[in-house]
Structure formats: structure tokens, C-alpha cells
Length: 471
Image 1 (cartoon, rainbow, N blue to C red):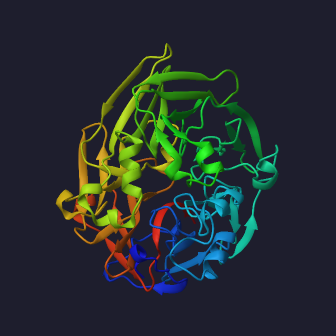
Image 2 (cartoon, rainbow, N blue to C red):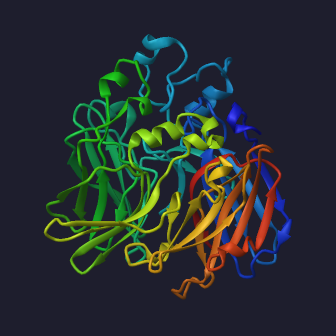
């Protein structure tokens, strides 16, 4: 399956055997991941959601399963008669039929392709422009759209059709068991809605914050006391989208003379704060924590949206060294008086930053991610990395040209013991062959290479994010 040329990953259900190493003893749980199983335009983000699960059970073979989320986009893609233009309006490309047809279509057809998460016992495929899509955890069968106990139910004239979005990046608090998330509405009165799911309880929409502009907000971070949003100067040109002239991602404008606004929202309620800093763009946070009265957070920072947009605008840029995105790991510290201190943690190009989820909202030492091990290879993210934020060192294993690694997720060796010992689990794809391997690393010895490699009989697509569920 060649994603770069519009191919489709086929659904699979199979037992896996290691081609190298062995499955670590005691590794028990399920890795869920989501991403583009096909590509309906040249944009990396324009693909139908293919959710996969990889289940590790001591004494049993590892099992992999993948299923497409049965969204309207997926159904329309199956019936499409032409590959020249997508059958529906997508974030990166307009539908076939010209400007008039796109004027009459909703801004983007949900593809449910960005992440997957277990929230209050429900398995949800997430995509930031729409409500979640619920799946059956065992079979991955699509149940349908989920309004999270009415929290994302339609409200207002535009939402009457769309409902309220729920982003692909919820944050868990291991101390309270709460799940927090947000959604951005980009209509005439742009707003940021904040949601909370209490442990064993319903999801509620806690508050809505009016935004001065239609900022693109993909992710957020959370400390024990605050939610952290970075509103970079990337603003949606709504008239260009509303008139059918441009799809959403092509209508995002970089205003480099404006600051990035750091929005700090108290979890306990009360007034929020906005602190201005030099402009940057980021997709993803690694983590955040309180340090006395200071708020500290790590993220992957890009020089501008323009650089990032160029990188995602074509599948061919995965193998074009001149178009590789150059984001690096940075740390920010915001003081109670509004001072902002920042510094780069490491110089390697990085994306998909993660931490031990048990350290969410508290201080962390290690950040894991995908990196460009050999820049001359011309392939984005061929390597798995661990960054030691105290020493400024990186522990890297590079697969080399022709390979693409996913976001690595940390799994503790002993879930009841808070230390640095554990495993990193990722997908490793061979772009030319269209194959996927499940790879497991010792999180403290990444450079030593994988301790286990599990070949999958079918490609699992170009995955973005996922979650580990401990058994």
C-alpha cells in the first residue's frame, strides 16, 4: 500500500510473531493508534481514520486489528469515481465540482483520523473539527458519533448542524482521574470551549472563552492548577473558506508581526490570564507542571506556520529534504507577574513529543519523540529518541532512509512504581514497501535498538496519535 500515491491500507486482524527479539515479559495491555489509512488529497492530513489496536497478553500471541471509522468521508471515498479531487470538502483540499459546490458544502467532512482515546470506558476516534466517533473497544466496530453526555451537543445556529468540536488532544490528570479537553469554534463569534470528564462521571462543558481572532489551536497542556494554551498568530481566513474559495488549511494565515498569546485558564475557575511572547508555531506539547507560582511547559516549536504548512502540503515532502519541517524541543516558564523565560532543550529536529503519562501535570525529566536521525536521508522522522531535559542529551536509534517512525508511547515496566524504567512502543513504516512493524524499545537504552520487532501483514497507514491502555 503506497500512501504517497493515494493507496488504501486494508483492514487486518492477525496474530503477530517477532522477527527480531522477543516481547518483554510482563508487557500487558493494548496500544490504540489512529491515522490516515488512505489519502484523498496530497495533504498529509487528508485521509480517512484507520484505528488499530495491538494487544499484548502474557502467554498469548500479540494480536493486531485495524478498522476504518465509518464516517461520511469514508463512505463517500468508497463510492468515489475519480481520484482527481476528493468527493467531499476536506481540511487540505476542496471537493470536486468547483467553487460553487464547495460554497454549498460544510467546511470540512469529519475524517476521525487524528487520535484515539479511552474516556470513561468509551473508545473514541478524535478529530479536532468535529465531535468524537465512538468505537467498540474489542472489535473496533464504529458505533457512531458521540456527544459525550450532551457536552458537545449542538448549540447556536452554526452548531445546529455541526455540534461543538472536541479536540484530538485530551489531557489526563493521574491524581484526580479527570480528563480535560477543549474545542474551537471558528464561526462569526470564535470561541474556545473547555470540557471536563470526572472519574466515573459525565462529561461537562465547563466554560467558553471568546477568542479575539480565529486562532488555530491544535493542542494544550495541563498542570495541577492550570490549562495552558498557546495561541500562535495563525488565523483562519473565514471568508475564503465560507465562499468556497479555499479549504481550511490553505486559508490559515501567518501574522508574524503579532505575538503568540499564552492563555492560562485556572482549573478551579475564575479569571484567565493572557501573556504575550515572541511569535512561534507549534502543533504539540510534551507536558507541563507547576513550579511554585511559575508554570512550566515543554513543546516542539517551529519558526512559523509557513514553514510547517509547506511541509504538510504534499505527501512527496516526506522524502524531500528541502521541505522537512524543523521543529525543536523548547521549554517555557511563565511567572506570576507575566514574565516569560524560554530556552531550547535540544537541537535535534523533533515531533510527536510524549512523556510518561503518570507524570502528566507534574515535573518530568524525559521527553520521547520522533526525530530526523540522518538529515541527509531526506525522509522525515526516521528515528526514535529520548531527550534528557536535565542533561540536554539525546538517546537515538535511527532506522535510516526509507523508514518512518510514529509517535513513541511510554509504557512503565512496573505501573505501580514511578521511575524511568519502561518501554517505548511505536510503529515503524517502510515507505517504499508499504509495510508496518510494531517496535518495542527499552526506554532507557533507545540507541541499543528495538528489543522486539513485530511485522504486521498489512500496512497500518500513516498514524498520528494513540494511547496505551494497561491491562
